[in-house]
Length: 222
Image (cartoon, rainbow, N blue to C red; front, side):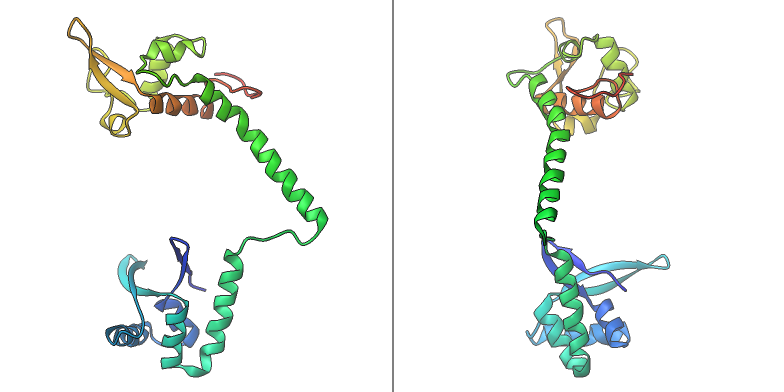
């Protein structure tokens, strides 16, 4: 079965799947769709797909336009297309609990998920200084570590340019994401400074790779 596309929450079906359901050539279905679109009867969204290393085009249609296209080509297959749309819509709809026990289990699962996420979120919120740019020393001290420790980690994760041997210079991707800025000291030397967003990114990196642990996090610190 070919895939159904959900584009910005709008469900669409491709002309490839329509052709498969109708047991017709995709090229013929595309021609029919283009003819209907030219007359203003339906609307089409062009898309591409890969097959055996080659790129081909197809059209995506919303529900109403699918029915029009199918009715134009094979009226006897309209029921099949209706069944497929019902299946698609049931898959997209949220699965509500059917019993009291299922509702309790759903609530418990959601509470557990929030509980697991809370320590990391609180950890980040408590660390971020929202007032100014920070250097590596300031961020590292919040973890009880040194700037050398933090800079070694950031170097491993492609934050600093490896082409600069003396001093530290951010890679362009780090600056583009507004994680850091290059500043100049009073003596004219370049200095890397981290933004609030940069500190959040660093904290997530340190937790994700086990360099530090958040509150109530039992993982070992590397």
